[in-house]
Length: 156
Length: 64
Image (cartoon, rainbow over the protein chains, first blue to last red):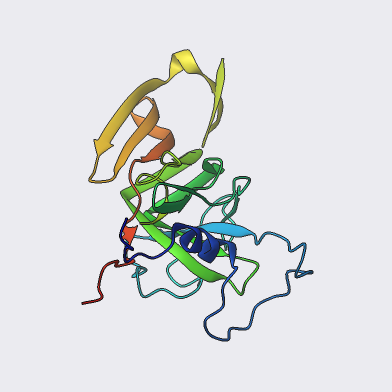
């Protein structure tokens, strides 16, 4: 049995758990080093005209949708399931759909930014689902299957 | 059954309801449109995020 070059699967998972620190970064206290809390995440919607993507570093109200029953910053993301692994992939998906209830968003929007509202609104990912509008209705973003390769975040 | 619209609650029977389905690269989107005498009075959207935005690029085996 030869040794193999690899990034350890447990490390990928621990990255999402915040277990490693290769450089210094200022974070909001997680209360305890031995019994830390879980960060909170939120989901904000952005207009078609906005330019969010891989270079986005944090939530911003610039280009965010506005309308009836939509609050700047968006809604909370349910995070009841910790990152886990399968094979050599670590992955994570919000544990419930993201729902904006009874909103009117008349200007076309196409993207959601998920960000860490505990840690200075740092950006996690941007997902473009195509242009749409909502009129006095509910927008439901149903998450992909929480499995290796299909989860919202995969470290493969 | 009544449905809340921009014009207040209406009996569902009075509304013309259509589903508009769009399938993009990584999403399936269903817009349910409620019309009253041809006027759009409510539009719900359900987006199924079918795939991750991308697989994070953690390159393995780069050592030569």
